[in-house]
View 1 (cartoon, one colour):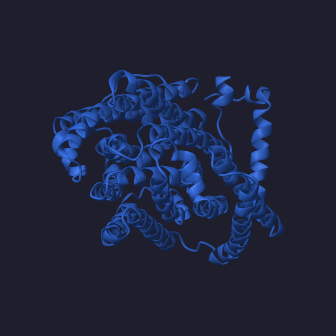
View 2 (cartoon, helix red, strand yellow):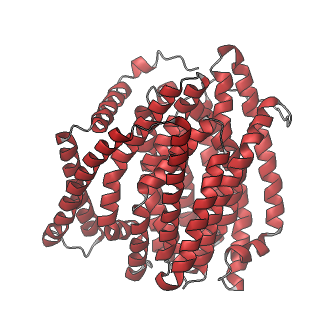
View 3 (spheres, helix red, strand yellow):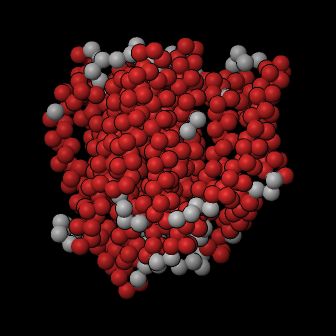
Length: 537
């Protein structure tokens, strides 16, 4: 069974479908988590403290771990793995990376834990002193989770390199389960600090699932700690600009969060909920396709096939746009229904729902740019270039921060969503432009024809979904959770049908490819005997 579930994905669409489906489940569990938190605590002090405490541990994890692994690990691992006689070096590199990153995370976590109180006042300047004290306590606990996640992400990068995406994509589901356990049970035992211990529990589950995924791949743990071997030097060289780039991105989010604390109580929670909801389509489509495409992009560079590299990049871009266009439309039209279903319960009142929905609208406008950033950045990483994403990200973050600061006094929390989205649009545009300068034509004439078809299908989706809303209201009362859910599902479902019909009329190739790949993967997974003959290595 493990071999069947953990087999290698053969195509990008197939891999993205697997990652996307499990990411969908993870996001769904995450939305359940948010609904539980909103219902129990509302948009108030408890969740403001909880989300503020995440900021520094998340920044630490992103800079040290994601900075080291997202840009450099997979290309370096594959540089050994693609040569069967050198695969032992791939495992040596893996063990060395585990120890280097774990030691770095432990050392920095200890230092930051000692300075938790001044850090709390820095990231939550608008909080009262007692709230900053609670942020510091929760932050110290959360540092433990980041150490576990750091180790887990190394093993997850191995699974990505081997195109074994099942357990890699399963781990975030269990992470969210841990957070739910914290909200439901740990809070009853430890008080509100139980939320932070739930994060630690979720991180432990995340690591266990990745280790399970490594079974049958040939990995054996061994102590190795070498700061000076060639792979480590290459990883560190690529890590520096990537880490700085992530620091810029994280700085944008931290500054926006700090701005939220200067507004009325609950605005940080509103901003965080809107961001969590908007990352649902970005995560299950944008991140999934970028993850699935990265090993293929790196392989084409290793094999010195620039035309094939461009083919992978363009086909993945078009597939992402095809899938994200209707999501943009439906989240704009049904944003109030989405927010009410996800977090509109208990203490989370109607005013908070409207503020979250309005902020979500501006996030939704940039689903496609946000997602393409993940793909374009990985294209640079495959080319062993981590400097360009750094510079473009710095420019984009500056634009976003200035926009939010300028608009916040007038628009409140909505300005934070506007600033973030404008930053994403600028970042994507710069990455696209510079990548085109480097690689040559993106076949823009074909993309323009493709865009016309997508726009036509999206307009049909919008008209049908908007037209269906009042019809559903006349048939189903919106006074209950199921009434709101039914309106969203029916109107959204009819909008999607209209999108598919127009796509069929225009013979969208991406639509054909997506459903053909979906059919192939369903049929293959229904035949475990075929998978059982696959070489697990």
